[in-house]
Length: 607
Image (cartoon, rainbow, N blue to C red; front, top):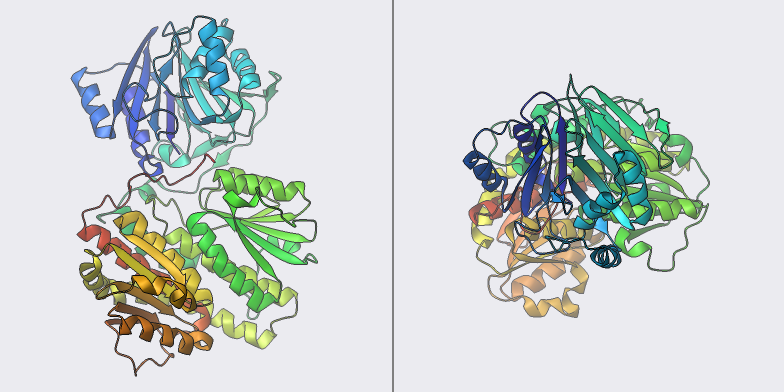
């Protein structure tokens, strides 16, 4: 959930570290700090709050001439946000300094042992124990010291360390928390995420669990926990630096909403013959004789999985379960070799989703991953993965990655239907023709609903609660709409199956309360209409999002948003867009920090 950058080279380390951390701001943080080595002198600069405050501290200290350093943005898990709890952390003598992402689960026991040996601590974090453990084990060989420390640690961690004995070297250790090494020209890097370094390099080594890297300005060496030198494959990122730039938009979220037509085009490029879909290596796994499909994910990805369930059951006629990844491991499950597991994670590093993936593999299931991060843990550990090709998504509130996930579920469900002889060739050809038009319909939806979204935002911004209702697949959309609104506007928002309103929530509907009703499927439209009338009878302000061929002429709602004409099967993609726009403009009206909402992180790498 935090950000790490390390650098060694001939340039200004402090400047490179801060710029790299700025590229990781989307991960969320409450404090920041850097440590730089100039010859054998180690200097720490730490600050609660934004990177701007850290930069002010650096400016007050004049030009900092150092070629090696490490930096960190912290999201508090142990110890309140403060200067003293901010990373980096040092040992008792100030000779070894570390930054850490993850959680050291046994830090209290380790801390007691270190106290007994006379160690003194400056913070209340779990991370500081790592610096003191390294102090105990370091005898000039940092790789061996990290090996010994790894034996004692329980939990998840990406650790980057420097020592004033080695002013041109940085070290990294990874277990269950992402870490990459970037390759430069007479300079090299470590980072928790590729976007931190895209302006510097596109060439990376991806850490596997239990690997240690020794990084000099002209060499990167990897070791296993036996101290043996490893051979690593180079990974070339196909993302561009301008992908992590706003390019004239006020916020990344608005930019990413407007990128959705191109995302759809990339996902579907070269996927179609006249009457079939080519999914490459995944097809071998999809062709298995499965008794059921299980989908697991968190947050927005979970909502895409709910839509995936409806699609797979409809097109492929296979029973589907959808589980929140953080709950899956703690309940009785029926995963076995006859289960196709689909895991969904934008970052590919979501801790709970990764744990669910590993559980599924232990049980013998085949695992397909949907992820936006090539080389991520989810990508590497699944049997096959489908890349979302959304490009870096910087805003914490997911938009283009969500639509990408839903589109991929359409492709997977249609392919499963074809493999199961559940879709005729003629019907599949019709659906493929529609799919090819979908990027244009997405663009049309964005353009058509921008202005009315602003008007609705103005109308709902002062209300304390907003409700979203839908039936069938539309309930999954309602859940996503409620999540989008609450996470960036901070307005309380709830989603309910439309038929459940009368079982309790209708008591909360009174004069003016905003209700968003989503209905894109004809088979449930009349039932949802009855629920809308119940809301209107109690004075609710109804905003209806509906498909073009559903008749609602006899009902006068406050706002009616009619999606562009397309087969209703695809309306689940289009209906998400006005929900995104309304959430964005509501947050804008309220002056919220849209791309970095309070208390939230983009990549949740702790359980």
